Figure 1 (cartoon, rainbow, N blue to C red):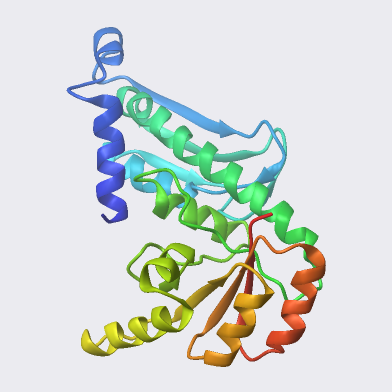
Figure 2: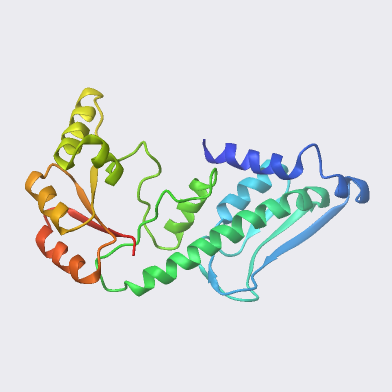
Length: 241
């Protein structure tokens, strides 16, 4: 589902057949002006999404953006002003805030995690553990916060996890099956495989034919040993714990 469809669904969810409160109390011709005021320090995300929401509700609204996505924000900052039909502003207001609050929260938390890794080659990756129907926005918020998107879904990477290994009958069988699948379906996707312990890692290294090795729930000592064993031959990823 693309971004515009998701925005349309969000507006439909909130407005339904109409903003009856505004329609009942405010003259159709009434004009208004509002501003988005920041109340907490963090990283701003969702401004571009807000613009699309306002445009969808009423293309005649005048949006003046003062702070852009990715900027550091503090209490009292004004992100934008919006001017036009009062009913249109009120109808779009809550959906805009819901998107921006959640995206800014994710971007801010991501920024804190990324800051802890300053000076290192390590990158923060996101996961598929996202809010249903909100993945595009949450992944974008991670990127705005300085993190990196992993895979968007099940369709853009082969990721061989413990369940795949167990059902395939072993590590070698799973890797070979993945290569056969890609060849038969004429697909070019990276292959990542999960290792649960050093024993599995040794087996993976003896087989090869993968792009990245995920070290899952390793303790710190074993993680250090694993990175030395891999020795830059493959991308490494640490998850869990």
